[in-house]
Image (cartoon, rainbow, N blue to C red; front, side):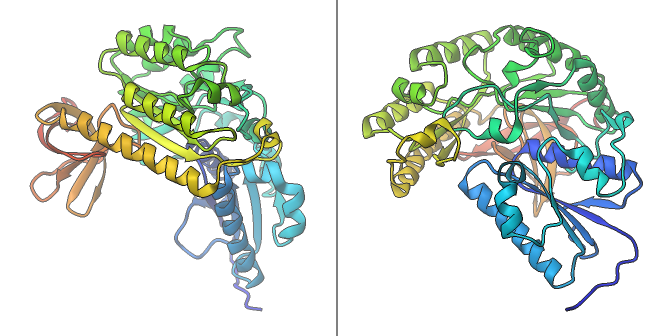
Length: 443
């Protein structure tokens, strides 16, 4: 067996899954560094002797990616290329008992709320004074802000409560402190995330308190955009729409996963809302906030979904004309309510239905984008790739939404700056434009 000689422990954190996992990895990285432990995130160098894998266990593809990653580092340990492998996150929370026996090379497994136990492996203390501090793994100009953990919703298809536990809101003061620290380090955009952001505050303030949180975050100096993700439609707190209207730094953007367009399927999914109520809510949101961009997520192939149900979903998509839309194929998850039902839509048909919905959305997105030609938008410049600077408007979240391309051979823009960009060309999912002026104060 080959063995590398390591001088001093160096930790590499590998993150899989959603933005909520990115935040967890950033908190771990901050705690390790605060304990003077040499740690990096997704390091390309081959010099780490300890690997921490933050896993996803949401759906089949994500679980498989997590298992493949664990096996890759288990092999590296067998070859003497790393000394220790620790696994944390959702997959570990849900399947550690089975995985312990199957992958004995892993030194220890940790659940989603066991950060202090993981730190003990490094003889490190959980430093409470670091709450509100974060070493970012994204570009400094935007950051995810996790406002709560876990979920109390009873959705039939979802294993998140099994992996993430009951809903737990973070206090407003703590979130404001974190936002101030991020702003001091150059963060201009906060992306608010949670399993269910509209449930925020019910546990600690005994009322839905998202509107209050938004006001406080909006007051943080240096934060120019606040973007709201993962709103649940049932019990949607409409007072947040007033705050969005009042505060210019809250983006006219809402990510609200709706999951289906058929009342029968919504009932089977235990979503607590039907199609007419969903449509009425979307209409009210659009009436209250002119020009708001609505993003949603749907599921194709849930047990019991007939051709008629699918047609109803397509009709819903056509009628609602969402600005942004993503679709998953149903994954049959143990210990969920839907697991008791027969997984009766063949995988091939699930994929076909998902493709059909995305084809519909491509046409809708293309038409919406065509209407933007000739308009000027405030754009946050995220990065430079090849001959293009790439940014986003207030109607777009990183990784999942439209991007704006600007010719880097003709124009110079600074990453992390805002610029006013006039759109001169559009495709279904991207915009192309040229700078008119920089935003004042961002030179």
